[in-house]
Image 1 (cartoon, helix red, strand yellow):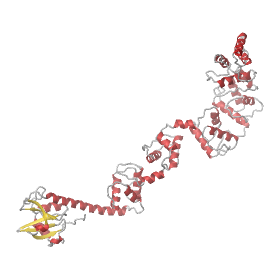
Image 2: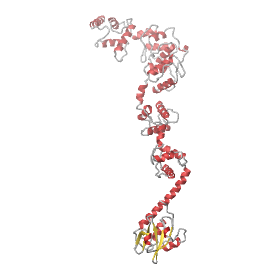
Image 3: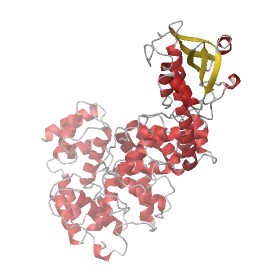
Image 4: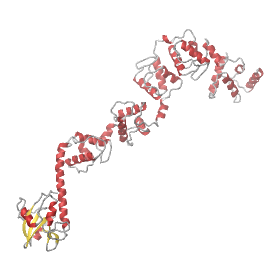
Length: 557
């Protein structure tokens, strides 16, 4: 064995390896360090890792801690008397001093011994398993806090030395607090703020005062690291940070970018989304962590306002715009929706504002989001009363008038609309009446017939005036008898108006015709055998005027 060591030393000197190792020798040295416990099995090989292992070995074996593979180090490394890491740590725990530390993931009798020492002072209450777990790390941190040591969550030489010395302060003598809460001050608060700042959760000054911004940072840290959101900083939180188990905010946000929030979801991401919706005015209730029906409605509003498909589901695009985009707020959206054009079948916030305004004006309608037949009917009433073309579509002009302070209330609008509707109905029937009169021109004359294919002398008037609700006798003579009894009857040809029935005689034959809007007379002519149309003044050159009568009032056009 000695000859092997001498040969190795000779090789090192020949290759000028004082301070470094060749690539061919590194595996041999590493294997020996791993055998002695200074390098963990499977640990990633790095230059600094090898150097640290050599330093620990040198300190444990009473050598100068240079971190280089000098001849003395190599000789001691391969000596059967080389002190292992566990042997050195055991010595440390019995009162010695060491720069080698026990940390998360370590196992063995020295970890068990550490747990026993911590338990004896009241810091550790878990199973003394020999495994350096989270509970052990918490106990170490608590001990460091009480005894004024640097917080490392690892049992380094200084910590072990204090733990095994008479100066160690037991846990029950700790006058401070195990937890940091809102309002606390001091060095521990400052240390907490520094950790939160390092991880990106805190952006304020590390002043040592646990204020509102610190509270928000603690809540954010807990939520994004899967902890119950208490707003209280505990030893467990410190251990997470020191042990590298806490996720920083940047990496959390990166993971959260692709998350879709849907009805029924809960958690801090829902709260964040609802807070943004609340600040923008789309949500009126105080934000919580539940994705309920009000959240769905608020998300739909936000999506509609910002040109997204209004699904009510907070997909990544919606959440990104909520968090970082220059989005349209509720005030801006409402202002736009108060004047935009709407029509039947649409479903939107604009429809809701429309129906809300109609309801405020007294119209019998429930505010809603769907532009259905009921909305169309009330918009038509408003348009009719306001003298706008009654299309039932709420165009921009209709919306403008409806939102004006002078907008007509329903009671008045209904009366006007009913009157206009009645007038329009008469106009419609009148139009149908004159269309029927014109349509009869050219149809055959046939005694006693009332249409529609042929007409007698009194048949045309009988058929057409029935459209206006007038019940006439079927013959011209009977119609004249009835007409002479009415105030609207006149023997003056100059008083003939459109829609009047005109009587005249040609020889012994009594005729009746209808005076049109074009100033023409339509009647069934026996001589020509058909319904004809001619000018009244020309007709009276060869016929005698027998009177005229108005069976209804013709509306002006």
